[in-house]
Amino acid sequence: MAMQQEWANKDYYGDLGVSSTASAADIKKAYRKLARENHPDSNPGNKAAEEKFKRVAEAYDVLGDESKRKEYDELKSMMNSGGFGRFGGGGGPGFTGGFRSPQSDFDFSDIFGGASGGQNSDGGFGDFLGGFFNRGGGSGRNARPSRGADVETDITLDFREAAKGTTIPLELTGDAPCTVCHGSGSKSGRTTTCDLCNGSGFIRENNGTFGMARPCSQCDGTGTFVEDPCATCGGTGTVRRTRSITVRIPAGVVDGQKVRLAGQGEAGPNGTPAGDLFVSVHVRPDPVFTRSGDDLEVTVPVSFGELALGGTVTVPTLDSKVRVKVPAGTPNGRTLRVKGRGVPTRSGAAGDLLVTVEVAVPTTLDASATSALRAYAQAEKDSGFDPRAGWAGAQ
Image (tube, rainbow, N blue to C red; front, side):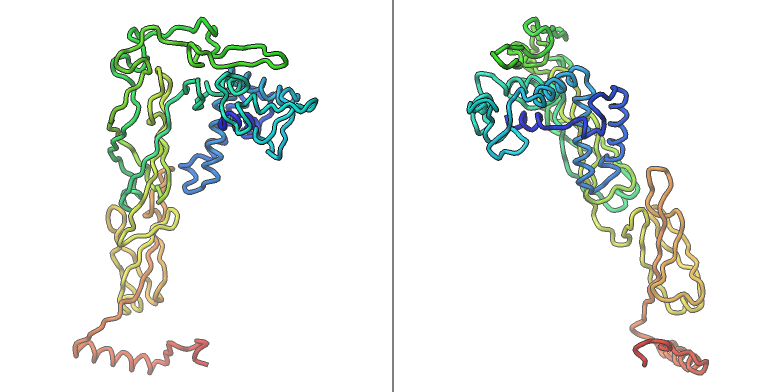
């Protein structure tokens, strides 16, 4: 019942940003635009975008289906016209707290199976909402879901695997299509339109003031039923088993990002679509590289002579090495940029390689090196070079 209360207060048109008179084409266009903008793959780590993506998908699941949209519109129209009375008891806009008719003190919470929102085993408004929404994939008391459950799993990748992309094998245990009936739930592979509800999935009843509906008891709200259930799966079309799949992780994923694989979740009952698989990626730190967006960062030790005189240093990349020119007079800590040798992107391009040079000071010198260094220091002094010239601390 709590889920049905939540459904009844959803503004699916508002979630898609369209009016209630929008055409099916406009609804589909709005959904595609919002789904693309808020997809988890395009917004790694963005919880707000992830929640928006889920709301948009749920809204389109209802409004994108002509029959579900009609039922949703009927429910909203009835609610907006006051057909269900007003909400009271400080419960806010949901079906919580007292629920009373404006003309009397009659408590309509009984329709929901008690003030606590429990389910009424004798039907009523809870069944009415169930008839509207549970056929769209909910977990109501009577109706079967119209798709399989989503599955979430975690994987851990090395830094370079995440940057370059990889494929990994996964083993998943859950509902999978029955191999005997091929997911139909029927020995013959056929389903029959329910003659009790004429395929609508629910039974309408007139109970005085209210027109009620409840999921059909013969087909569990699906509109069809199996006359010759498969002995292996018991007519459900699914069995519990472990399956192996290969998952392609795209290049450039970051730690904490979720990769969605449509249709790779648990199988739906009686041949309905499978749910989705969400793979949460964790990335191990790398001893050489770090990332800044699509740029790859590396710190390279150099000698003072290489910075003062200039030279060329060999720097690692994700898959090879590259030679980087160090201009004469390069200060310690400067970052040199190598175009296109960073992290690959979806467009086929790549970020840059950012090479930071850092002087390594020798801890021991032999006599020859010491003599040469002292001669250099004297020559440096004679030339008038002062490393602390202009330094605020020297004043």
